[in-house]
Figure 1 (tube, rainbow, N blue to C red):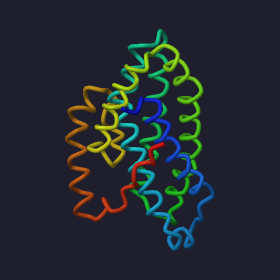
Figure 2 (tube, rainbow, N blue to C red; figure 1 turned 90 degrees about the horizontal axis):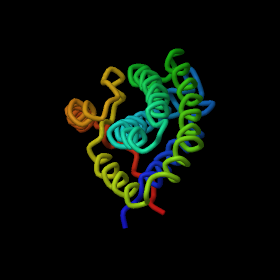
Figure 3 (cartoon, helix red, strand yellow; figure 1 turned 120 degrees about the horizontal axis):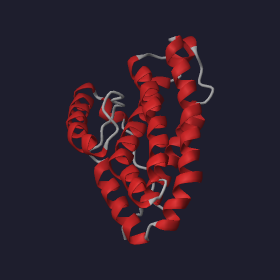
Figure 4 (cartoon, rainbow, N blue to C red; figure 1 turned 180 degrees about the vertical axis):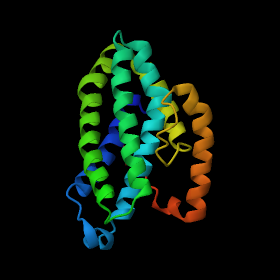
Length: 196
């Protein structure tokens, strides 16, 4: 049986929320370098980059299509995601111990929790109410397939549009995966959340 879109997203959110819990209050300065913070943050960047790209390709277009106020809901969520990608890019470009790195991490933790709450509390109940289980399973299957080839870096300058994500995003994803393999970063790729 295919996993429906909301179950797929819930698994991703649980994984990300777990990472945020571990990263909240992360040590600064020399302690940050010695703590392995860079590996944990890399896992967060990979997980969030994949998650947001998949949502932009499949979930937000579905929200726009199925909900009366879907455009407004999706616009609000995508704006949150774009702001989050800029914070992730600061983390990608920085290093533990640098003040901006830690500022970006703290800002991201707060913003990500707010974004997840918005999705789960405001968007998902409407989707569950108005979209058939069969349609949610179709969306979920597409999202699950897309995760295997999703970008592993934030790409904040790539427009958050489904068509762009499926074309330019695919190119960016290919480059990401090659870079990850060459640098060994792919070994840090977080495993998928366990299936229920």
